[in-house]
Length: 213
Image 1 (tube, rainbow, N blue to C red):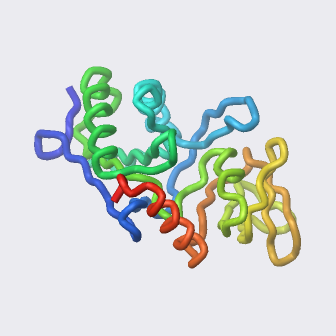
Image 2: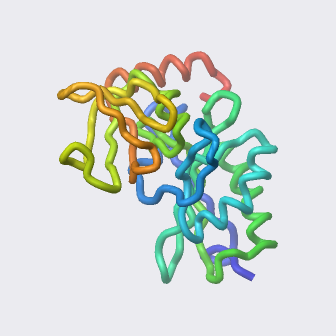
């Protein structure tokens, strides 16, 4: 039976910049499989991590949580990183992380998808969160983001600018050169850019949810 390093569950909860958001910086892997209905398009995991996601997603959703990203890294001492948020308001507290961790541990102890001992880490997306679902680009329209494509588009693979929402399966981003349309399925990785504007918005959200302090 697979387990965790040091012989027991080991979950790490990361407190972020404001106390309401939690850390989860950078984008390592994005998903392989996706729902074909346009606004449900998502790239949240790949390979073995996608197998883990298929096992835990239904339970977490029934508990009121949505998966933002799952990454399984390392060979000798694998680390399973699960980034999640509440379906109701996108928030995530330390107690939420603990609840998700317990549920995931119970499922994986039975299903045993990872053949070796591993460490489980659960966190919220953080301020400069990865954008792994098409709906994320609509949700965070107006904020600045960085996007990297799988293939060259208009002579380059990297784009930075202000998100303008989505049209069909296209992400709209206002760059210095003008508005550009990026096919979501050709995005390799994307994340919000940490700006004063984003920090201020998160603080406003934190104040509207005092229970998350």
